[in-house]
Amino acid sequence: MPIYTPPLRDQQFVLHEVLGAVDVLRQMPRYAELDADTLNQVIEEAGKFCAEQLLPINQTGDAEGCRYDASSRTVTAPAGFKQAYERFCEAGWPGLAADAEYGGQALPHLLQIAFYEMQYSTNQAWAMYPGLTIGASECLHVFGTPEQNELFLTKLVSGQWTGTMCLTEPHCGTDLGMLRTKAEPQADGSYKLTGNKIFISSGEHDLAENILHLVLARLPGAPAGTKGISLFLVPKFLPKLPTTGKGREATVGERNGIYCGGIEHKMGIHGNATCQMVLEGATGWLVGEANKGLPAMFVMMNGARLGVGVQGLGITEVAYQNAAAYAKDRIQGRSLSGPKAPDKPADPIIVHPDVRKMLLTARAYAEGGRIFAYWVALMADMQHSATSEEDKAFGADMMALMTPIVKAFMTDNGFRCASECLQVLGGHGYVREWGMEQFVRDARINMIYEGTNTIQSLDLIGRKVLMDNGAKLKKFGKLVQAFAEEHGTSTEMSEFITPLADLGDKVTKLTTELGMKALANQDEVGAAAVDYLRVVGHLVYGYFWARMAQVALAKIKADGDKVDPFYTAKLATARFYFQRLLPETAYHIRAARSGAKNLLELPAELF
Ligand SMILES: Cc1cc2nc3c(=O)[nH]c(=O)nc-3n(C[C@H](O)[C@H](O)[C@H](O)COP(=O)(O)OP(=O)(O)OC[C@H]3O[C@@H](n4cnc5c(N)ncnc54)[C@H](O)[C@@H]3O)c2cc1C
Image 1 (cartoon, rainbow, N blue to C red):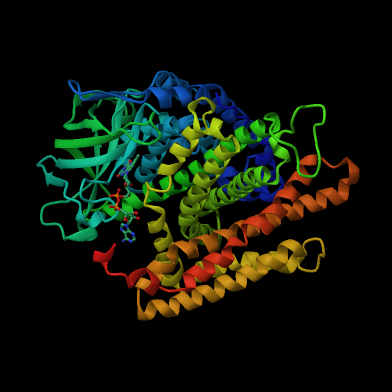
Image 2 (image 1 turned 180 degrees about the vertical axis):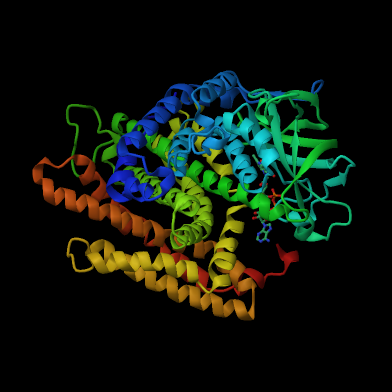
């Protein structure tokens, strides 16, 4: 079985030594009483839950998969999944960041993201059941009526009911404007929904007593395209309201007409049921306004995009831990510069430079991804809970700008790192026993669902950058500039500041150039988008790696010989990042600037 140790030391470094998270959070009235001990304790307990409850059922869940019973149209999750979910709910984890009003613990989103990281390291397939539930809660929180929230939101926050997002149909994935599921208004204010959805994660399972589906559908006479889509709440079992008491005391009633017609047999995340859902006149209720379903669903989708990005981080971390342990143990060949373990018949493979390159790649992307994702979570807290409108707007802008980068950059890196870590194990990585091939298979979906990484790249360059003339990007650029100015005179920091400032200039120039080209031909944006996201992703990681390097350098200076080796390792990894990973931006800038012609001149019939 793969190993996993929650990365508590690095999490604490990020939270307390670099981001100063407690100070930032305490400025918000909601978190005024928060202290570092609370943050640490929650993360420690969360890590324990993941290592003790989720890791042991990850490989077995992958081998067993979900089972579909056609006669009852039900799905059974792999052994142990239901029990782990029960423990998760008993401990109050589903409502970690939810409002106390609905039964939640009202802790920061930051903690939720840190918990997600560890869940995805230890069992991505399992973690998707509660993960989508939190996304559904966030959507209802914003768009649900007080009655809907009293009934449905409280059930999601307690974990008694789980949630799903039902967008995709057989003929429409990326292009949701083509969706056909119909919703007919009923005299009692409800709707009858009819249609077919596919690829619905956690669409049917035995973990919870009820499932609340958030379904996109069309009302009669709705405008064509995305402007005619509405959002509906469709429970698996209709809620039975008590004659007295509140909605949260509802129980499950009659079976509603939404069924699972089968599950997909897929490459990875076997423990998560990917369902075809059939709506046979299912009863549902409108969420938000008619024909404004897509913006409402975007609340869930944006939350899910951050979650998926963190799936990339979680897999990177666990793959790294396993590859590093293996590389220190496995002996093969001798170091080119002479034996390092002369008492053994061969040296451990960690002596070989290229093995180190693979390990350091995963380490640098894990640690860079962690600080980035946690900072973005802090921006989410700021957006929701800051007192000043200015801080709220800053949080919202950073969330909007960074969401596609979290989703695409972190999941591209996650798949690459899982593959490199598998390579560290040679042939042993390719066989099931060590668990590495599962990480590679599981990591692959993260680049596809929640909007493919190409769609994320188009979102970044089109909607998030060019549409507002780069205003949000400039706001982030100011953080980079301020840091560069503050530390620009330090000779020790120049190896980080010089390439960071240089990349900042190049991003500005590239953005202007692509903006100009886009005016003449929009295909230029499509041709450059994926390369552009990688370049901006490195600007963001470069900024956070430089900040981490600065803290590590200060500590090394202060503590001299007695310094905790954690800081020495941090500095070495920062150097690796700047010298070996960030330079790929040169290639991507060149590719982005090469234009659309080299992609479009070949006629389709010649492919
Ligand atoms: C395991 C799994 C779980 C899923 N879970 C859910 C879920 O819970 N709920 C849900 O609703 N859906 C879910 N999905 C669906 C998923 O979100 C879609 O598969 C994804 O959005 C892509 O849609 P598609 O598969 O139809 O591909 P298509 O839209 O057909 O795209 C095919 C290719 O064309 C590219 N492409 C398409 N349009 C453009 C464009 N305009 N510009 C550039 N490139 C383009 C895409 O990037 C992709 O590479 C899941 C899918 C899987 C496999």
